[in-house]
Amino acid sequence: MVFLEGRARRAQVFELSHDVVCAAIGECKCTEKVVHNLVLNKHTGEKRMVEKRVLCAPSLTVLFKRRSRVDEAALSLPAIQRAIKARRLRVVRS
Image 1 (cartoon, rainbow, N blue to C red):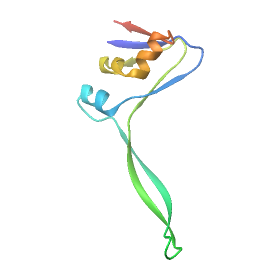
Image 2: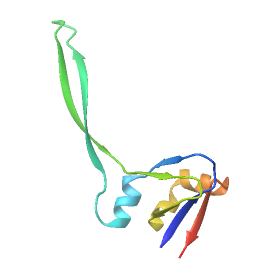
Image 3: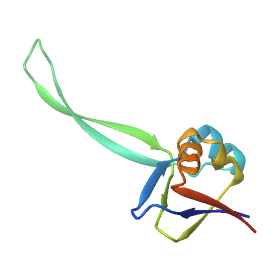
Image 4: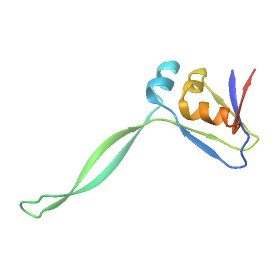
């Protein structure tokens, strides 16, 4: 089991990659959001709402002196590697 422990005195939020995390887990943990856009037709001047569905990859929130369990694959993400290198995160294995 791998945990990330926050070392910075603030909350840190990391966007996890669908390709890396969902593939490692074996199932998709992405959520689907509905985005509404106002579209203007240039020829007629008509405005209408268009609904679009977007997949959102999961995010990871790490708090100061708190441990968050993550999959081993999440450690390969560049944002998490930078935070570990800058000592804002600590990896705890148990």
